[in-house]
Amino acid sequence: MLETGLVSKAIDVEEIRKDFPILKRKVHDKRLVYLDNAATSQKPKQVIDTLIDYYSNYNSNIHRSVHQLAEEATQAFEAAREKTRAFINASKTDEVIFTQGTTEGLNFAASSLVSKYVKKTDSIVVTEMEHHSNFVPWQQAAKRAGAYFEIVSVDDEGFLDFSDLDNKLKGAKIFAFSESSNVLGSNLDAKELTKRAHENGALVVVDGAQSAPHMPVDVQNMDCDMFAFSSHKMLGPTGVGCLYGKRDLLASIPPFLYGGDMIKEVHRKETNWNDLPWKFEAGTSNIADVIGLGSAIDYLKRMGMSNIRRHETEICRAALEELAKFPDVEVYGPKVAENRSAAISFNVAKIHPHDVASILDEEGVAIRSGHHCAQVLMERLGVSATARASFYLYNGYDDLEALIEGLKKVRQVFQ
Ligand code: C6P
Image (cartoon, rainbow, N blue to C red; front, side):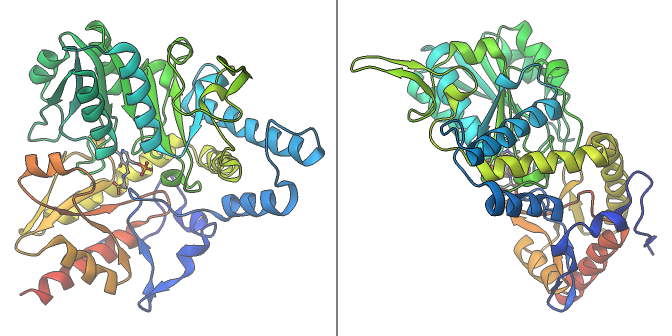
């Protein structure tokens, strides 16, 4: 039997849960056990209150009008940019571009970098474990440029095959990879990979969708050229994210979208771009949700990203141990908790992952099943889908126990 205590050493789960109104609700008359955090996280009342406060008290457009509300909204928006800068340790706020999320950031990177830096017969390198958002934009940009599109193999442990990587990096112009896989949970050494790519003269774009919410990120130390992540996976609102880019690189590439706020002067034949970062933020921004992201960052900062990482590693270790007790459950990705995130994909022999997820849902346990937008990786694993339980700071050992008890039910139903 599992230890059922709510409190792990690094994080006081019981206290944290009080901040998340949704965790009080029941699903099918059972306590909600939310283990679909890799898809999206729940929101604390502090973030919800920030949105209510914005819409109730100072809703206004930014960077345009001189009235009081516009001043307050602009200040809060730019304060969120500074919080985001500090969160990833970028050196300047003008390296922080607000986007709709990781997907838009990566599309922007692929479109702008390839049009400027990639020519016919150059190569763009990604990996087999990429989410479609960090695969398709590069695949399509390579086609448009007439460039080669290379895919680095994943080894059986869930990491990159380094001899394949070194081969494919030779002469590459861009290397794009996820710091943490949404399926395998593998945490890659982004600093080392960036160094190897730079030695080969390639620009490095990192998909941080699954790393930024769960561990400390330092883009200066990593030395990547671009880094994308989403607010909704890190306690913030949906519809907003960030693309970090090194200043000189951002200054060298063309805008991705054209419209209001991204221009300095428009003449009949010519247009001059606004300064960074506004050059890349055309149209009215998602003001409320950017301010909400700032509030999520405040919350995460209070908890401490290293504490969150430690907490998730503890839960992950216990989950791997418990899952290993089922002879018919196959877990994908690294088997050592320290090398991975707490997004754990698995299959139960002869039972479709959608059936696993449906029966768990009856027990109040929310997990995801499917290909997780990583079909090339599914092909590599030789499966069409997996079940995935993914933990966050408000998950305790009682949630893991609910998952394990639910899996026992799944196996009973299909006996
Ligand atoms: N993965 C999952 O359940 P957006 O949707 O733009 O916020 O993030 C896209 C994305 C990019 N890269 C990685 C590694 C991701 O995991 C995701 C989103 C979710 O795994 C939804 S498909």
